[in-house]
Length: 229
Image 1 (cartoon, rainbow, N blue to C red):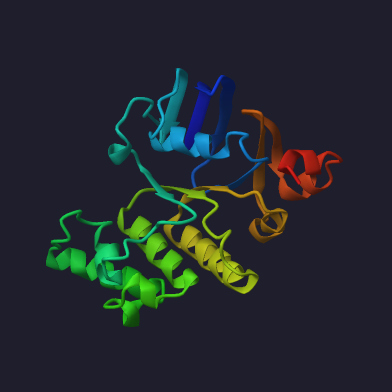
Image 2 (cartoon, rainbow, N blue to C red):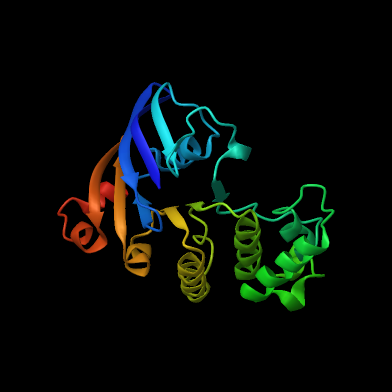
């Protein structure tokens, strides 16, 4: 689970404060106009930014001051999720060992995940030889190999065409159900709401302006203001 208790952060004099909780295995979509604080929220949870005050609890533990590498969190960004000088196998191996030196058991884990994300035949390929969707599959696979129960996604599919985006959403939800992941996903694209079909948090000027199901959000008269469109 994720629990933020009055977490305060200041960015360029803008006051941001977050107070909400997410249950284990829940998928939550985070929306809002540019600069509202969506990515900042993920960075606070991941530990890349320190809050001025408040408490961040992850899986029942106080992780407010924990080093990012030791938090039960993996994070996937829109771009730069793969290293171009490394093969698919090496990119995946980073999720298990930064040295890329894997044990026999770890090699087996990597093979299982590669098959799950449909990249077994691409293990020796390099990112320049992959499509955008395949690159994101590599990034998702690396997150899975880290064995962390919370996955944070910062507009991970916004650069993909509609067909690939639909494919990636389907894969993400299959994996989420299979591994019981708790997911927070940032987007600013209205069409993504219907694709995710789940609880939505809307952030406006550093605060949560809406918390409810996506269908309730679509009924809001000020949805254009919410999303900055």
